[in-house]
Image (cartoon, rainbow, N blue to C red; front, top):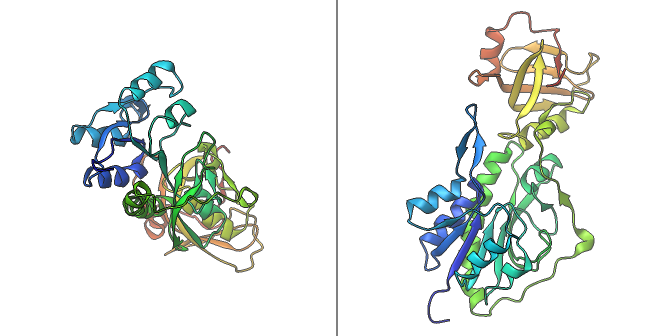
Amino acid sequence: MSDPPRVLFYGSPDFAIPTLQALIDSPFRPIAVVTQPDARAGRGRSLRPPPIKQLAADHDIPALQPAKLRDRAAIAQIASLRPDLQIVAAYGQLIPTEILDLPSHGSLNVHASLLPRWRGASPISEAILQGDSETGVSIMLVDESEDTGDILRQQSTPVSPTENAGELSDRLAQIGARLLLETIPDWLNGAITPIPQDSDRATRARRVKKSQGRIDWQQPADQIARHIRAYTPWPAAATTLDQTPIRVTLATYSNSAVQSLPGTILQAGTTIDVATANGVLQILRLQRAGKRELSAEEFARGTRDLVGRRFGTADD
């Protein structure tokens, strides 16, 4: 098409920011964004806008915030914008057929996995939790089901054995933004043939709940270490020490044989070593509720008689 397409962008959390910024800085600047409603957060439970709403406001781009995208009023409002192309990045709602049928060039999604592996809401956490050595980004066509559309382009990247979900999300967000901008011109020019996903190879990443952050010391040390990485920064890897909530933010592990009960603190120095069902978790950084994050050494200096005590679960 001779004129730039009328692009409508759908996204909500931080992951979507690099994609929106890349579009703003390109010939595909969105005419508007669609994002989730403001939500209450923090200790004061004050209303906070999604990160995408703030970025859009900084660039004088209108933001639509329908509570339910299937509402007739929301569909009519979006239809009135006459989009030629829709871009989706971690929006948070399924998009109904009436909206997907609007743009002549379809709807493209930036998804943080190598589809069909890890369809669903939490592909980054799931990739770390399951010990994947590789993940990536898929640019796909959106259909009415969740993450089942045809693939336009993919880019893989190794998963570092020390990388947590927040760090990996930041990397994948940047990869996704670049890959999308490479994909759009070829898609508009008809130079890409969509590739259907192999549903027989599909795996699903369920939405993460806060309760999933609790550390189960009955698990092997390597699995607990992945758990901590997968749930940092949210919902955080949680345990207790004498009923005091503790977040473990960084740890490694060894396969050393231990006889102590899982959760028992074996030594406290530059690391706090904890017995598990199989091996030793070596905590490097942790945080008491409402306090600043500390190194293991700082925590040990400020806590008497750690060795021999046991960590429990967050709801003990």
